[in-house]
Image (cartoon, rainbow, N blue to C red; front, side, top):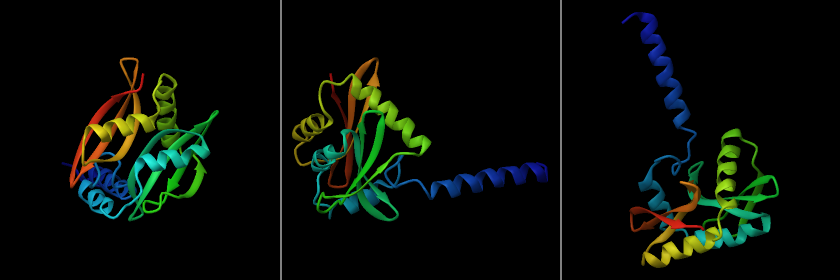
Length: 172
């Protein structure tokens, strides 16, 4: 290989590894073991976060994630054409902050979630409760709506011990 090709490969690898530092642990196959360990001390529930976030709009997704080395509960809500990220304390469930979503990638995700929720007849809270009840001993870690073949569905990620399990609940 030429020195120029090697330099290009190294540059691409450096950019890829640098960008990986900024991805939350739970995002896109992050460190499941770290999330499971952090969840052991969390007393708040995903369901409680969904309920608490309703003051900021209709919840369209929710997840526990590790952000800046700390566990947090993040809920996306919609009110009219606006999207908010509501962050709840993982121990008390109290709303710590609510900010308008402005990041292009986050706005794209929120718009896709809004489209799925537009076809939903079942709220995310109900879908989450159904998944938890059907899987005794589990707790919900995330709930994300999506359209599958035109049907509104929710992917609910559950945690039991250190094992994660994804289940799908119908929203229509």
